[in-house]
Image (spheres, rainbow, N blue to C red):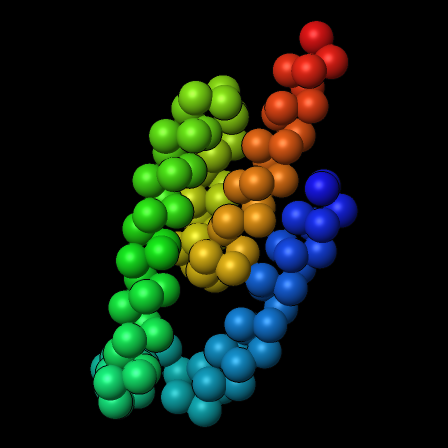
Length: 107
């Protein structure tokens, strides 16, 4: 599973940023344009709201499950979720949790 999560971490970083970096190149860090384009129509708003809710759920999961599992670095997937998105933060958290579970199993 570690290699699977590792691959998903890479894809979760690269694929969204393949769209975001050119957009930043065209528009700069203009939050007004970003919000206007994200809510341009109902399907765009639906997608963004789904992502935002998923990110909030994931952050709660990272905090609670990370504490339960005794993860030292749960702040890393937290920051990853905020800066990249769920596609990066979730597999990163799952990889860290998998590594932690393996260490506990070896004891």
